[in-house]
Image 1 (cartoon, rainbow, N blue to C red):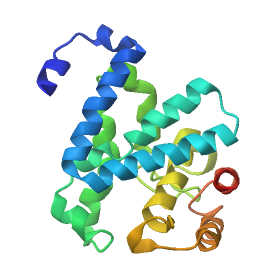
Image 2 (image 1 turned 180 degrees about the vertical axis):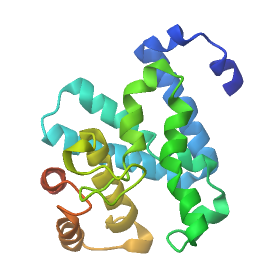
Image 3 (image 1 turned 60 degrees about the vertical axis):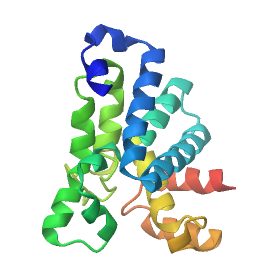
Length: 199
């Protein structure tokens, strides 16, 4: 089924309907890999949209961020499930394999015309404000804003979301942790908008 999609000429990917169909197919692949990863992708997208709206970004940019947030972990379908199951307790070799998911997800989209604007947000969502992230060690405003927004939403949902069973924290604890990472791992402006959006 996916082979047929890839055989169409690039021009067909120019409209929003096709982006929607492409997103549906890619999200199905993520769901086949892991239901938890699928749910996490939706949660991150919801948080990212709330933050982008709070920052008063244009509607088109909010939609780009939503789509990129949905697909931010697409590359994890290339990571062996045994490695994902060990997170965050990985060996150096396993961590190297895991870290490649940013590039892997971006590379999957590089020949799809309607996804071009999503690629930087997906590739750089693990960069850090202080320049110690991956894959390019980008720093500060050199990291695309969409990627910075996804980074905050991703961190919150993966590690400190009070709704996440294994990492249950109060909202106050979650806010404190986000603030502790502000200016180091995370963009301070995005963190402030995220906390405001939490209400």
